[in-house]
Length: 195
Image 1: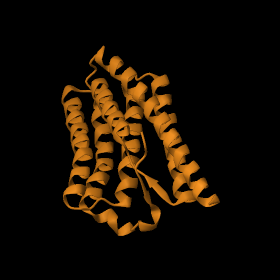
Image 2: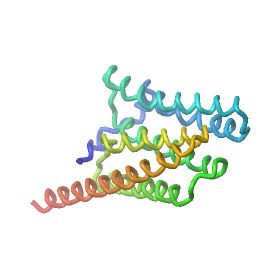
Image 3: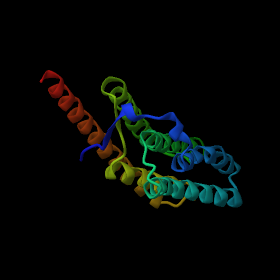
């Protein structure tokens, strides 16, 4: 799969205040409330945590819909959406490690892939003035990770374990896909420079 790319030259920081980007950022505001609810470890607090996670998932779908509907697909949004996805998933996995006996090996795979993608994306921005955005495989992976987190929150076994293996496979595939796409962009960029 190819990575959707755009030029950094069209980056306008004021676009942060566009409605779809505010919806994206609002997912970060939910994180401490989710953590607080998970720490209570009561049926009621777990239900609230589930509702908040579902709201975050809804907002993740909604920001893209709003951006296309209002013609506000921006480079700021292309940066914020996957970044907020990674922060949200990373925090979710961290919460599960601390509170829900989540397997360390799976957490390390997820964290490693996200760090690799962030480093490669940063290199593309600084060296090539290019921004990548999520493709279908990346979005599918985020959805699988969200489902996995939900299964752990409700302590639904063996579904949580099965979801973990599916999510990790998708994490590895999307990481490989991103790396291949990154290498293709770098190679194309070098060919253009040598001409």
